[in-house]
Length: 88
Image 1: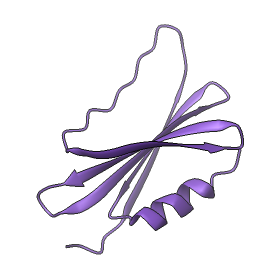
Image 2 (image 1 turned 90 degrees about the vertical axis):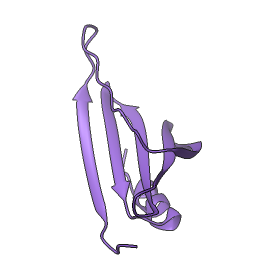
Image 3 (image 1 turned 45 degrees about the vertical axis):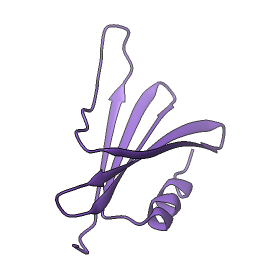
């Protein structure tokens, strides 16, 4: 198991004709939602089978911008702290 952690943040402006997607091949472990300052954050946990680590994905929309956060190697507590420290 690696101690390496990676945080990737991506943002897209919403346009009527635009479409953005992220394809995840890893098995979904669980899916939850968290409400923060009136914004719903969709959180998914994936298992990276090749090294038995966890990948988290958090998605939300704020002021007509879509945000995607990918966190590799984070514990659940580290992921929650990262999400809870988002400022809206």
